[in-house]
Amino acid sequence: MRKIKQRSVLTGTIMLFVLSGLLLGTISSVAAKDKVINWKMQICWSETTIWSEGMRQMAKRIHDASGGRLNIKLFYANQLVGMREQFNALSMGVMQMHVWPTAYGTGKIPASTFFFSSPGGFVEPEDFRAWYYSGGGLEIARETYAQYGVQYISPMFFPDNPARISKKKSIATLEDFKGLKIRALPGLQSLVMKELGASPVYLPIDEVYTSFDKGVVDALSGYTTYGWYKMGIHKIAKYISEPGFLMGTLVLEIAANKKAWDQLPDDLKAIVEAATREADMIVCQADLVASKEALKEMKASGMKTNVLAPEDIAKMRKVAQKVVDEYSSKDPISQKVWESQKAMLKKLGKY
Image (tube, rainbow, N blue to C red; front, side, top):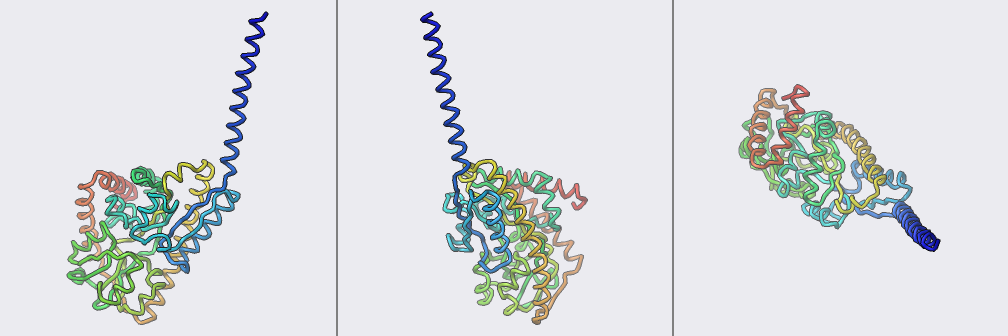
């Protein structure tokens, strides 16, 4: 009888500990869900652009959908760190989230140039989008960035087919690229320009206007038409060269510090992913309309337009594909990305 009593007491004690543990776990889980999280996010534009407005809408959407549990405080270009240092700052946790032109990170991650633009590859934004969401692109981007302490959340597409802008001479044929000092983004764009005989110069967007005005470069590429107009570049430029064959679609990254991301509850991760994809569509369509209007204004201001011949565009595409093949062969991740992109292009009947 005594043994039975002792066993009952022991069993009761164990049950008490188990129930206490479950209760504490539940309380901890509820506390974690109720915790207010504040993130800093730097974007790569000034406060007054339509793109920044899209980001403000995104931050509000996250706040509202999370019931105020996740607050995103926006910082505009260079407010926390310079554009060149932004990726490293994100990786180190200086900020928890950012929007950034992926090609800026090519020196650190060679494959990042493929996540930004695909010279000789994707031209239409929906083709590029298909690769990201139906061809394994998003998974490859996340796998690549995780090695650097960064969570790649979503791509942000800019559908405007950006033309080249020049000041001293028009760019009407392949020969016009020879000896041309042109602002180009790091990675594949610069390599293709070099192969065409140009002298590419990497300049973050916040350094472009002054450099162009002072003659550091004679021509510009790698930005949307709305972006050039908003910058006021039409006031000092003379020529527009169409179409923007080399970079038909630009893709920026929306990414987070991986440690901060991993600490988010799953429901907040889902809210952020949904909000970033919505922001992509808002910004994408806003830029498409604004760039068409900007092009009309730039032409009305007196800028002259040259249209490259179809045969020149075809030759440039072949040059670009050769450069991309050579570049990808030197880095296993780049090769993986390029093979994946080519597979999607073949499915779409465009390679």
